[in-house]
Amino acid sequence: MKTLLLVFHSPSQNTQAMRDAMALVVKQENLANLTIIVKSPFEANQDDVLGCDGIILGTTENLGYMSGALKDFFDRIYYPCLEVKQGLPVAAVVRAGHDGTGTCRALETILTGLRWRFVQEILVCKGPWQPEFIESCEQLAQALAIGLSEGIV
Ligand SMILES: Cc1cc2nc3c(=O)[nH]c(=O)nc-3n(C[C@H](O)[C@H](O)[C@H](O)COP(=O)(O)O)c2cc1C
Image 1 (cartoon, rainbow, N blue to C red):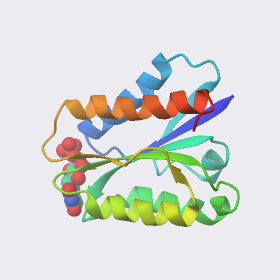
Image 2: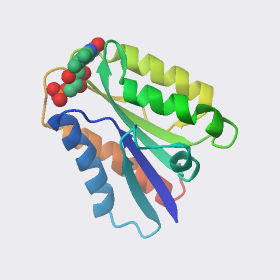
Image 3: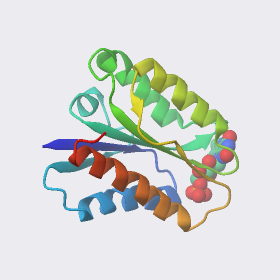
């Protein structure tokens, strides 16, 4: 059995819809050998990371950086997971009102430090809200879930 962990900071209706759509699309795939666990960064801890086979990170961009919540998650899990989770397949989505570059840079820096392995480019959902963001999130989640299930990521 494989576990996909979705850690998404969702302070708004739109980001909650993004998170929920990702979880739902993975559940609808009915992958017999994969479960998805959804947590906010405030709830997620080192045991969640140690127990997962792949991770999707989601965050708003706030003040040119990832949310404080996601940063706090990294601060707590970094050293406990550093030696044992190298190579962990990761995908990430950033919801940014108008930019997103600072958050992408920060994620890349931290994930390089952790030696996690991006299996997709970071998805940046930028600018005024567009319903199409939901579909992009679904595709990202679906791809990682199927890749994990089939052992190809
Ligand atoms: C305190 C604060 C700081 C923000 N800083 C940025 C920023 O630096 N860059 C950016 O693109 N958006 C910024 N935003 C916009 C958020 O990214 C946006 O509100 C969030 O992604 C939720 O989007 P939504 O309206 O679609 O729910 C900021 C929002 C808040 C509340």
